Image (cartoon, rainbow, N blue to C red; front, side, top):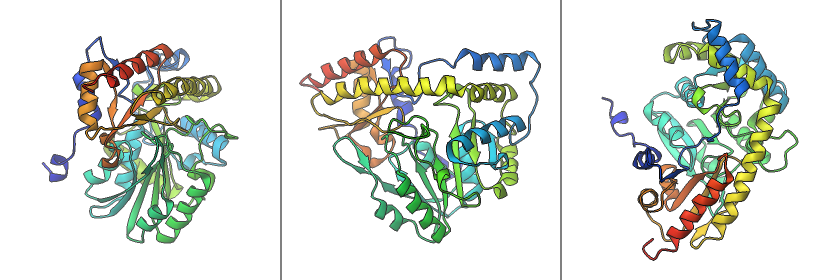
Length: 387
């Protein structure tokens, strides 16, 4: 086995979840997904596809009509995006891995903004790249970017910049001005940008297009920019494993080859479901975002009122990321919360060493009372002298 694979750290989120899965007395908020089922009309489209016998391979890059639909959706949000820049993938994580495979050679330097979902920093390591992390700055429950530090880290030897905004786990979001500065700098250094924007619609600040700022708002079609999206979050389709890439058209044919050697193609019935989701997007996504805002605004004040907790409302995403004073081992505390409080949260150390002492709570819950109940469990545990 390759040493890079042997040395990969196991997911701390999974480690905590494995300690609590199957226990009826645990409220699970560890994974980044809603507990709401995919809307019926999307499921019905997949069922109809299967009943028609659509059980065969599709084009490597996805059904042409789905690529056109995605291009129209992206164009509504960010200006003209042509279908020849779109590739459909078997999930957002597959899209990210394909992008890294396409752009990174062993030994290349990759810069990543952290804390971040651990898959994003593991993928370059799997491919033999040299990873350099630039951490956000933690404050009183909020994380901010030191733009000058990030710009200084990106040099002509930097092959790829990886940035996830809105960010999992912190909720931090890049401003349009910061994106413009990064794009201009990476043009000068010849650095590719891999932008994970899967949470762009889960955005709570005022926005004319009901989405977070995107690199696509400012980039030219030929810029060294690859943007990753997924149907998972804003369409309630995590288990369907369907995502897409937006890239320069010059990469598209090569991306099709990579898809062939990874997964061949996405399943046709999931793509039919995605077509239905996009056609009904005005029905699904605004409702999802409105409910998640309600979830955030229910949970965050409860957390803020607790002893030792430092938290602020995230601008985007589906997480409350909070500092727990006096904690120097997030993983150990997360496991204790499962055992002693019946509460399942993700440890901050899963996302970056700098997030030691932080915990992530996915607030995407159908039932607001579950959030209240979970907060009560955490509050009782914190007030216990042994906590």
